[in-house]
Structure formats: structure tokens, C-alpha cells
Length: 332
Image (cartoon, rainbow, N blue to C red):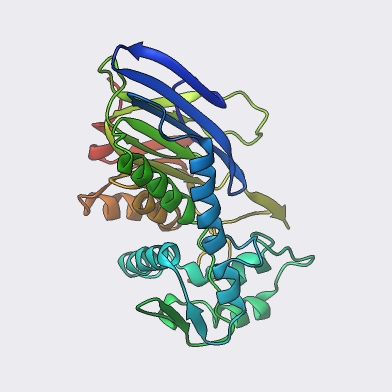
């Protein structure tokens, strides 16, 4: 399942909506995916090159696909290294989420992600139980220590992968950049992660569509629900796009750090609403690992989150549920 902003977006477009403001649309490619931005302001003082520059600077810190990035250098280091503001911000949020989820969200999962054929490095053979057990000795965010701008690690084998939180952080960075340029009515979307503030020039709420899950990317998109919000962020995690099958089992990119294996539960997708995108993005994968009942209980005990879940019943049929706070966001 993906989420999408329900406005026509072009590569770079301007249209007058009233005498005091224009609608500006920007789109491009970054972080292995696409991005779309729409904002309403008196002039177009933020343009595509500004956004591309911001996203490139984040990639230079956090992209595991770039050998020169800070995260790649950290993963190659013996004891750690000094990191920059982007990396510090993401690590701080990651460690906070690790604690809150009792270890379900763990950025040191990287060795297991790679071993199962996902992420920056692909393996020709899947790991056996002995390999998984060995790699698990390198996976635990308690092995990380952030002191000022130095990120240390207890073992040389500890490696981090922040793909489960970096796009949400990137959305927030772009949103902050817009606000620094006095733009307070906008939608920022990167790879399906969305942050909204303000309203359209006609006073109507921003609308975000939630797609029904599809197995084949060529299948037509079906909007299952529509959210109407004027602030906050929405992200989605699912297990139906990034996966392969082995010995009759579905192996997804969602690896459970407690076991070292791909999660095998009833969850199909989770959509999370939070004040900012880094928070929503951090929790959506963890909720997938929890399963429906535990995830609902977890979110209901927090005032800063709302969630919508699609899952399979024991009889194989598909169902959905949501927290009360999420239902209140749905278009009536």
C-alpha cells in the first residue's frame, strides 16, 4: 500500500489561485525514488535546485548506497567516527524509538538485512541458522554510543542502516526549509512519505489518499481511504512489494531483530500519522513486526500516534482496522 497526495503534480508548474498567492509544484528523483512538493505562496522562492541540493546533502550523510557517505564510513570503521547534524538527528530518534519499541526498531539490523538479500549488498545464498545466529551477535542498538557528534560502537561488526527512518527525516528537512522561506501551506512527499501543513488557497483541507495493497505494481491503483489534514505526517510500511519466496515462505525486507528472520505474521501494511515524518516513519516498521493486537495497544497508549492497519485473518480473508484517532482523520 502506498499513500499519495491527491493533487495533480508536474515537474515544475505554477498556477494562479488568487491575487495573493500561486501554487507551485516541484518533482524530481532522489534517494532511489521520486519526490513531489506542492506549496502555496506569494512567489516561487523555493525551486527544484534548492530541494535537490538539500536531498543530496542528506544522501552524503545517510545513504548506504554511496561508498563515500558518513554512514558507509561508519560501517567500515572499527570503533566509530564523528558524524554531522543529519546523522546525529537520525541516530537520536532511532535510539529513542529502539527504547520505546523494546528493540523492535533497530538500525543495527544492517548485517541481517544484507544477508537476506536486501539493502546495499546482495548475497547469492540465503543465510542458514548458524549464519543468522552469528550475525545477531552484531545487532543491538545498545552497542551504539552517541557522545556529542561522535558515534561509537562496541564491536567492529556493528553496522547501521537508516532506510527505515531516513526518508521521513528528509521530508521533515524539506518542510523546515520551506518554512524558513516563509512558506506555511505545503505538502512534501518523498517515496510515499508525506508531510502536510496549512490549506489550499480555497481554504479546503489537504487530501491524502491511501491505496489498497496490490501484489503487482502494474495493477491499477485503488484509493481505499482519504485523509483530510492541515498538519502532520503520514507514512506507510508494507510487506507486499519488497519480498521474494524461498521454500514456500515469503521473505520480506522486514527483518525481526529478535529472531534474525523475516517477520511472519498477519500484517499486510501499516499507515501511521504523527506530528512529523521522522516519527511516523520510525514507528511504521516496528508496528508491522508487532502484529495487529499488540500494534493497536501500543498506538492507543500514545497520544502522538494514530495508525491504520491492513491484515489477513486466520481464514485468509483481508481485513482492516484503525485506532480511534486515525478514524477521526478520515474524510467524512
